[in-house]
Image (cartoon, rainbow, N blue to C red; front, side, top):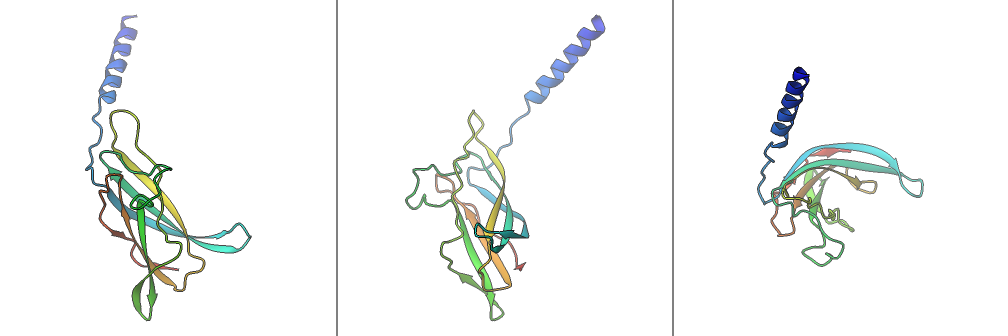
Length: 160
C-alpha cells in the first residue's frame, strides 16, 4: 500500500508540474507567416472543373483580438486578411485588382479564459480557375480588431 501511495503522489506531482507550464507569450501586433501552398483540381457547384490554390498560413497574436464579429461590416472592419494578387504579364509581375477581391473575414477567434494568446494554423482555398497567367503570387497582411497589422508576407512565385 505504501508503494501505491508513493506512485500516486509522484503522478500527482508530475501532473501539477505540467499543469503549471507557462503559456506562450506573443506580441499584441499580429505575426503572419506563409508556410506553403498546394494546387488542387476541384469541381464547382455546377460540375465545372476548378483550379484551387490552398494557402497554408500561420499567425500569432498576444492579446487574441483576431477576428471580426458578424456586425462588423463597415471599413476598416469589412475584412481582416487582405490579399494582393499578382500575375506574370509580358515577363513581369503585375498586381491585378480582382472582383471580388481575395480578401477574407476571419471570424472572432478570441479565446475564453485569462490567456488570450493565439497561435493559429489557417488553410485558405482560393479559386484560380479564371486567372489569365500561368505564374502568380500573393501578398497577405493580417489586421486585429485594434487595427494592429502584421507585415506583408509573400508566397513567392506559384506556377500553375
